[in-house]
Length: 117
Image 1 (cartoon, rainbow, N blue to C red):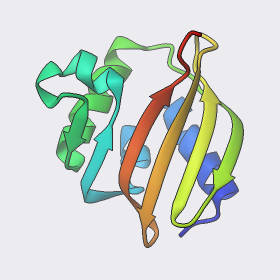
Image 2 (image 1 turned 180 degrees about the vertical axis):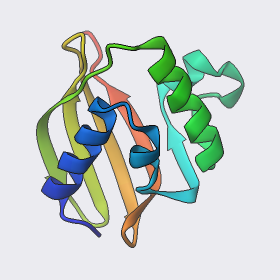
Image 3 (image 1 turned 30 degrees about the horizontal axis):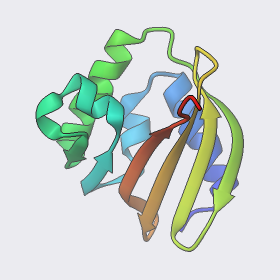
Image 4 (image 1 turned 90 degrees about the horizontal axis):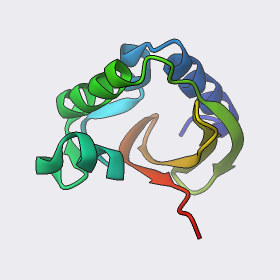
């Protein structure tokens, strides 16, 4: 598993450069990624994106719709085969990327978002 801090630096740099291929290089071809935003953009997925090509389509559409996308890492958490990146988006909203690794690449991931109380 990669070092959590170093991974988060590469992750945020790739997103902020809008370099989708640099983001995707960290994911297995058979990645399973869940996100409520995926359900909004691609309702047929039920929020679960399967495979790198589908993830490329989802994130590519997101980048197209959000040309001002920018993330700021707030905190990074390391667990057993897991890294959680807590970040703010361009609107100041808090979110987490929960990434479960198999070796040096992500096998499963989850986009999670702060809910209003």
